Image (cartoon, rainbow, N blue to C red):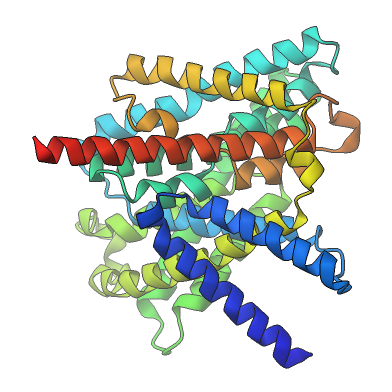
Length: 394
């Protein structure tokens, strides 16, 4: 049985790799292929009668590790230069303002429908307002360099800001001066702790002489994230700062207090570290979405009672996004469509305690919104490809 399981897992990862590789030709986002693959495996298991233990508890663990790796992977590819400041400002604006507008509008709708208080309404709204970097960043690689960089910044900021807002309302029953003071204090603490952790990890990466170094540093990165999360702190800030420091240390090497980091060697070690992060992130991301597809219930996907609400929410999401893309001066095509919901939406939704759930935001609705936004992104990227070919022809 052990050999059969090894063969199955190896075949599964290789098939996921093939689906990811072929997505550049089929233009089908790999996340949709992974979800479908997981669903097919579920049906195969049901037909075969094989007894499989409950895997629902594993999903948040894999998802959390995947979120850390994907944000780290994205930040390792970003270059902080003076000419990038306008782009970063626009990305931060697009990550934060549409999120607040949509979450506020949906929370108002839930309250008007008699669904809980403002706190529970906002907690249930925020997961749907956050762009999934786990889907957006890999999909953006087929865009132009400028658009891909914008999507990486925007989706990473969206994850971070979304988690910060979600934690604030999860930990505070009311918005008060004391709650805001505590929030600012925690934010300051996580910035200080992140600075120390980034310094220590970077120093280890540049100083370790053992032939195995990238994996221990990566494990410590996930460990620091988990430790910060224990105290309900916005730990994704640390992950992004660590990646940005590794990818941009050459621009700050003249600072005196950084001399001891041996930045020349750190730059040499950053590339293999980046490559390991990319490859492990792929395995974890594929595993998460295949497992998510395996755990999908067909009746949730085909729930016609929640589908009109899901369609209305997706229409509102993209309407708000189009408005603010125009306001920020960014092109509607293809950026309008690269706003999928996914991993972070699932992780935050399952973390809402039963007493704070609202009936309108169900698992069926979450799944339908994720699938609809991924499908629209696929169509948008297909149109973008045709436009690029047409422009080349002219």
